Image 1 (spheres, helix red, strand yellow):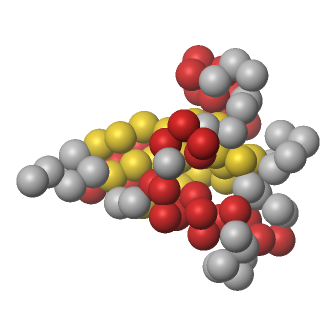
Image 2: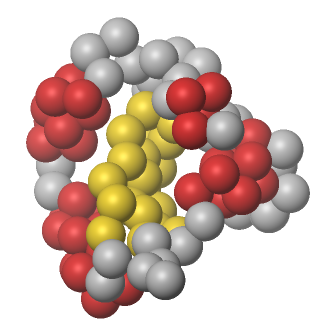
Image 3: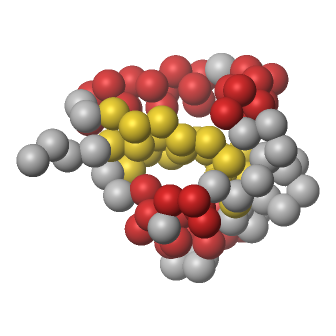
Length: 96
């Protein structure tokens, strides 16, 4: 059985703050952000909307991609989101 790893981008209600993360369980991790179960950046800035994600079979590839996205400009992140989700709708409902 192949394990899956995800990089994801989440934002707040007004799409003003972007958060990039990596996980091996996208549904659980987004739920944790939405429910504010973990102290930190996403809780402080009310990050609760999944707007982009990619899947990988190799954890090191997922981590490398996360670092690449985090190192990029805000505009590059916006372009990435727009390439998959032009309306910036919450993709969480599509994956649960």
